[in-house]
Length: 63
Length: 284
Image 1 (cartoon, chains in turn red, cyan):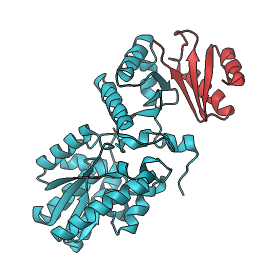
Image 2 (image 1 turned 90 degrees about the horizontal axis):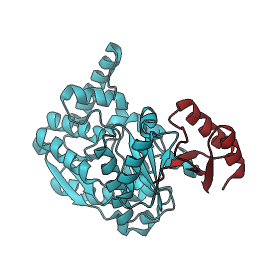
Image 3 (image 1 turned 45 degrees about the vertical axis):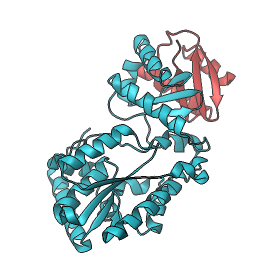
Image 4 (image 1 turned 30 degrees about the horizontal axis):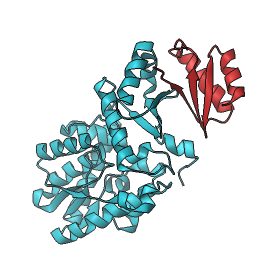
């Protein structure tokens, strides 16, 4: 869990829990409608994660 | 995959191919460490043309880290271009130094490979053992290259300065199937350093990637194995399509059915050497 990244994501419009696996952040979305089909938003999320030391960020695909 | 080259680049590539012809003639005979990938397929086909069937041999080292689909392709290329082909089992997973998956895993793998292939070259009277390393590879983190050097294995494509795009263009000109195929490193490259390489894990990755290909995913794609979690890397221009809700479900189903409990899609997309970045490993 990384509260700083979670807060930054909420400000960007993404409600998700962040699971930390060393330098990989796994975003577990609260709702399937996290609109990451938007490329600018994806770039923003990657940048937010990078600012907090993550080299990789991935969205968990939920059932 | 774009293999278009300008007129001057084409002339340069053609000049390099003449240099390669001359280099091969100078050796007289070669054993090619062959995977069926773009580079070694090109090298094997040129060697077959220049030296004749009796003076070359293409040899595949096979283990659980070598995908079946790639073997099928390697055989198809060999049949089409009349390459004499041999496959030898390599047992790198039995080596604990390899299985522990250190950052120099490729060194241990290639050491086993060349230990296996060099005696065959001697037995067949082939003068030199060569591999398909190209000039672009040299800049990357490639501990396997050290094993090649230590065993006297030559890399004529790199020595002459062939770039990947030149090899693709020349392969296309020769009609070698797969000239546009994405790079296909071994399946162990999907496991983070320090995460043990096992036959079962390699098989999981192989199944998952095959299932994703069956969904119609082309280009560069990897399933990175993080234990319970599979992290999919797709080309960036594929991400928008596969992040749509229905597509996400299809991805998840394909990968879960391959034996993973959880599935995630990397938001940055495919990166060659992604796990080197994750582990902080850089080219020496």
